[in-house]
Amino acid sequence: MLQRMDPSGSSYWRVRARDKPAINNTITTSTCPGTLRLRIESNVDVQFPGVAPSSPMDLLSDFKEKWKATLKERSAEQADDLPNYHVSDPESLICTSRPESFEIGTGASIYTRTLLPAILKAEREVILVTCFWAPSSTLSALNETLTRLAEHRREEIRNESAAGPAAHIFPPLRIRICFSSRSPFQKLFHTFSRAGYVYPPSQWPTKLGLPAPELLEAGRIDLQVKSLFFLPFSVMHPKFLIIDRRRAFLPSCNVSWESWLEGCVQITGDAVSRLMQFYWGVWEHGTGDGVGDRSDAEQRDSITRISSSTGTIGLTSIKSPATLFKRLDVGTTPTILLPSSHHRNPQFRPFPWQSAATPPATPLNCAILHLLNISQSTIYLQTPNLTSSAVIDALLEALQRGINVTIVTSKEMMVLEQIITAGTTTSMCLNSFIRRYRQRQARISKAEAGGDSGSTVDLEAQYSRLGKLKISYFHPATQGSATRPLEEPVQSHLKLTIVDGQYTVLGSGNMDRASLFTSQELGVLFQSREFASSVSESVADVLSDRLDTILDSEAR
Image (cartoon, rainbow, N blue to C red):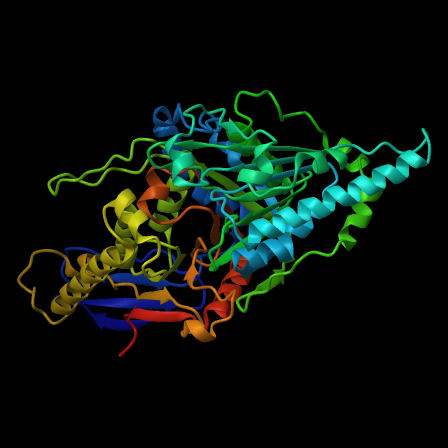
């Protein structure tokens, strides 16, 4: 305990504990002369004799009650959302999961190392959802995977048929591929129907780069390809892969050509069924397909000799210098699925006298903003772009409360898209953010120097310790393009938020205006210090030689 003097000359006692996430600064004050003023600045959860520490579900409860209350207060806004199954019951999004692995790399390396081999092991069903679909090494590898899978299944089916009528009958493999954006022309003339556009089999090889329907049919592969898009800006931005309704992968990458830094988390458990519910609500909208079609028992009983042998099929492997794969053993983890519907009205406020619009009250938007508001010690934010005024304001408020903030983003990434959807760019927003932060630093320095000693405001309350701020741009490990490896990432496309070392959000949502207002997004919140630590360590390892720091408030 240390006796200190505040800027007004009054004394107070400071009590500090260290080494764990901080609780909110608490100031007890009085206007009576001689009254002791006590500030607790603690980095540990406050515990009292006889009171047990909070369990993981208790900690999640601390977050979810305010989150649910906000969603219910604004439920009328969500009535027409896609999906909207959760509007009347936000509790339905709360579940548990078992994080199995976390991976970093480029889109091509993640697909060829993890996602495509998982497709080969599917027994009954594959659901692949992505946003952008473009000719690329990833698409070529996907074509190769489906071709070899169909050929292998066709051969196995022939062998079984030759064995006679008593042979095992192979069930079909149901594959659903869903995407939003293939070309400007496709988006301009896309149907407005929520049923989307289903591509006829004749277009699979010519327009989509997929195997011929005859080959897939011979392997008893039931393929359907669908797209959804809503003018002017509403892409379906989520990305996930579900295998047999038992295992799911949530990558940040598209089926596209960009060499960007990406991430992917693999999960099992109850959260997979919640993810299936999201899929049904969006991509099987109004079809009646989905719920109850295949029970878990049917899935377990449907194992065939195909599934045990397809793992030996050789596939093209694309390696990246940024690849890092970590197997996880964090156990059952409190989890919340965070859908965020698209909205066709971007709610632009083009005139300077207009205040910024409030983001729609989606589960993802409310979760991110609430996490920033309740943060107690640290915020780590990695996003391709940062153009959301709501997020920036929340970060500044957190810094004002003494929260330490770290931001990693990309420079000059999709600049035209930023201007069209947000009317600004990440670099412009960061310059403004840094200027506002330094203004706060200057005010605090002035107050501590006694420059505002005549003010009647309680300076101890007004000028609390400003949090530390660090902002970095991502860059390739090898700067020269002539010597750069083919799959060295040139931008960061990973979407990651870690708050207080225990709340981790992964998924498709960027911290830009498009993600908060117009795009459909999907995030997953994990409440686990062990999971957050594993992800944080992996990311730090990959970023160790790939960051250009433009502001570090601790640097001298």
